[in-house]
View 1 (cartoon, rainbow, N blue to C red):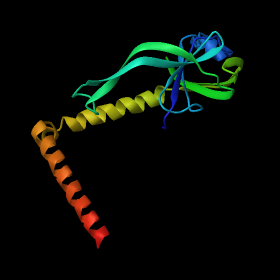
View 2: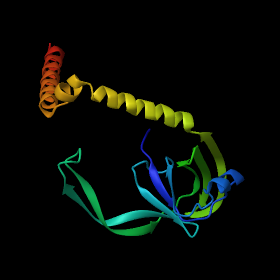
View 3: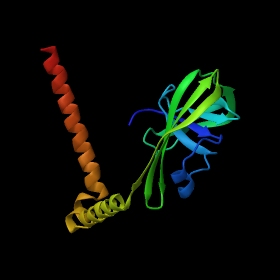
View 4: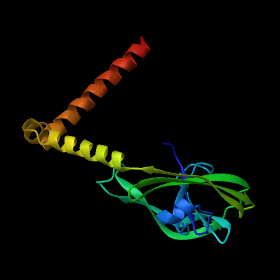
Length: 185
């Protein structure tokens, strides 16, 4: 999985009969991913056959100790800028509908930011009952392992996790120091 951009589609796109039967024929307000733009997790909107890039007037860092980076960016003042893309993009999405896993893929052709053509490239539906059974079995096994007494009352306690993290950090520091010494020799 690499970096991608998000497209909010507010247009009616072509659908096939399987999509209609599964209720996926309403493509308005569907989210798609694409790798044909910058790949910087930017957001685009396709509405009125025009492609827009979503920009923000203000971005600020909000400190949050629960977040892995110590915080996150909060965006204020959303506005749209015409994005004059010329060429074809491929956009795709995955939906789980009942007992079906559905992969939807479109090719959209633009000329100076205006949608010229839209075609459904791929629509695959796969029965997901086996996948769900395997996933449930995985979580049951994980729950069973976590409830074994030495995992529950010893290995997975906060004190032991803290100690293991400190030991890991110390070993990384020693390994890094030894590596830098060996490079200098």
